[in-house]
Image (cartoon, rainbow, N blue to C red):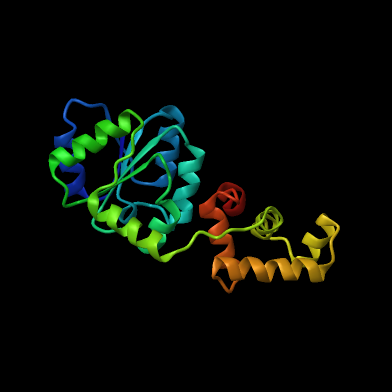
Length: 206
C-alpha cells in the first residue's frame, strides 16, 4: 500500500501518474495518516513535510517511531537544517528533492518497498557537510543517564534524589554535558537526546 501525504494537488497528480496501477491512498491530516497506518503498517508513505500537517520535525519523528514498519519517502523542494539534524539518520526515511526525475523517484520508491533507503545527492551533500562541522559528543555512561533524566523533565534536585547523589554533583555533570554537546540550554540538550535516541520522543512529546 502507498499513502500519499501531500496537500499540493500538482504533486499528487504527478505521483498518481508515476504510480499508475499501484494501490494508492490519499491523506490530508496526520490523524488520517495514523488511521491508515494502523490498517497498513508496512505502507510506503510519500510525504512533503513542508506541505503536510506536521507542526515540527519532532512531531513527525513521533510518527516515524510509532509506525516503525512504515517506509517514509520524503519529497520536498528543500530540507531545513533542523529537519535533517533530527531525521537524517533514520534508516527508514528516504530523501528526494522535487527536481528529481521520474526514474529517480521510481527507483527510490522500489528501494523503499524493499527496505532500502535512498538519499539524493543534494541531501547527501547537506548531511556530509553537517557531519564535517558537528562533532559527535562523547558522553560517559553517567552523563548519558543524566541527560535522559533531563529529557524526562526532572530538575537537578530530582535527579540527585533518584541517583542518590548531591545536587552539586548533578549540576557539575550537567555543565559537562552542555559543554560536550556545545549547547547552553536544557532545551538544546533535550533535542540532542531526542535525535540521538537517548530520549524517547513519544514519551517526551505526548
